[in-house]
Length: 130
Image 1 (cartoon, rainbow, N blue to C red):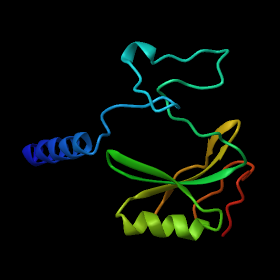
Image 2 (cartoon, helix red, strand yellow; image 1 turned 60 degrees about the horizontal axis):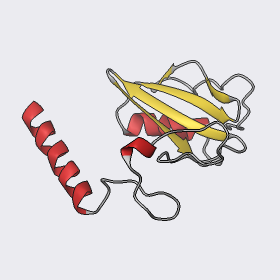
Image 3 (cartoon, helix red, strand yellow; image 1 turned 30 degrees about the vertical axis):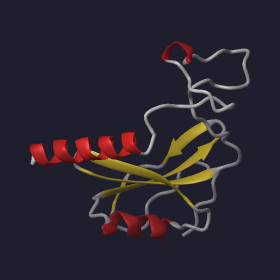
Image 4 (cartoon, one colour; image 1 turned 60 degrees about the vertical axis):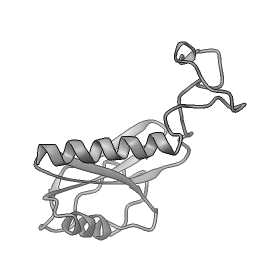
C-alpha cells in the first residue's frame, strides 16, 4: 500500500513538473529566485507567496475520521444539513461547522455525522442556516 502511495506521489509530481508548476513567477512574469522569497512589513505585496484578501465572512465545513480531516469553504447557501450530508458522503465520522472572518476562524464543537444537526459556531458570524 505504501508503495502505491509513493508511485502516485511521483506521478503527480512528474505531471506538475511537466505543466510548468515547478516555479513561481513575480507579478511581472519574471521568475522568482529562492533568495527573493521574503516578506517585508512595508511592502504591499508578498513576493513568492500567493494570498487572497479575506473580506466578509465565509462558511467552512470540516469533516474528519481517524487520522484525516478535510475543511472546505462552502457557498453561503449551504446549511448545517448540507455539511452533515457531506460528512456522510465521504464516510467521515465527525463534522464541525466554522466561520472564517477577518478576525480568524471560529469552530463549533465537533458532532457525530450520524447525529442531529451539528452545533453552530459561537456568534454564527457567517450565517449558517438549518
